[in-house]
Image (cartoon, rainbow, N blue to C red; front, side, top):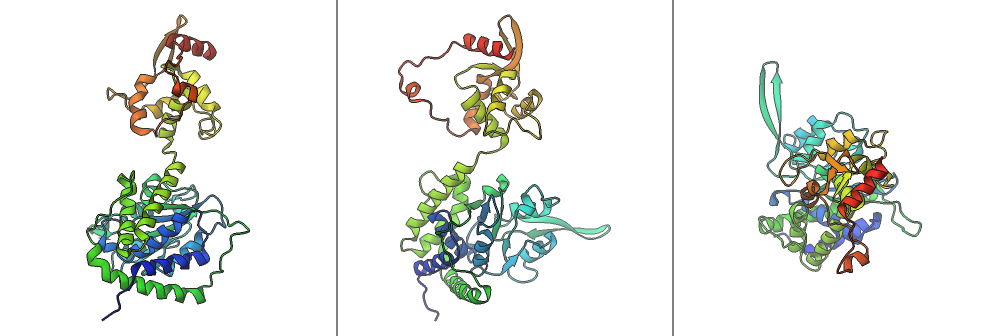
Length: 397
């Protein structure tokens, strides 16, 4: 009869193994990576598998080293940086053996500005986080073709420069790496020595997974307060592993969840459309009920940390503003569009705040805190709308 493995002690070993070779930017990252390594042995117990992504703005930040350590700990590793879509489909479908854990370094070659034609790989990575999802392809010669569904469900660890598309980011645990400081020391990783050590831990992870598989299947771990929707989907398998391990892992896992989700939210500015809506609300039209388009563009293009002054080599113009805002709806469920603003005896095209309120409420993060005086004043002083509009009209002309 095989020995009963102490899950908490085993996860401690996994974490310690990573700490020997990796410097992660947050303590919660060590917890998340250890749980992710273990979850890769239990995929069929879950409805979904979170991707884990090590990202950085510059090379030499330890991303590839993190993947090298993960490779020693997960089942059936498959390095995918140079794999074709057909090879991945075949591997994950089980034609050539057990389902692999895909290790994808240089993921920016798939999603970044130099990605080229990688639509099949992007679709594969998008679909494969959910159990039961398939990629459908026509197989055969000439007119003798049949539609075949290839399973895509598998664990994926990624590393790359820059950012990932929202469709991948929201399905991932994101760890933003940085170069080691001089006082941050790690042990050099030597594959011929340390691979065997990691594989020994890997084999015990597999044994522990067999012992808890039936118990963990169908579990619904309790989420920390404020973790809902897609972040809850991402962390559900990891928290289930932590609960099965026991010890201090359930508490540490939930703390790591809150920490990393908060970090991801702080770094996420949303789509360019959401950024436009947010900038309009917080920096351009705050406290103003309507504004001419020319004045809106002047203010947008003056925002130093915003992209509006360089949209494909030129500033955002009225046509671009109209096209972007037209994707969103007013409270009456009609597209947002410029309307006439009558003031100072003339008429200009512009936008009314009332038309933007519904989009602001639905898409934007909570508004920025205003100055303490306006936040605490019982009778805040607000400019008369007509006076404000006339001043903006004057400056615009």
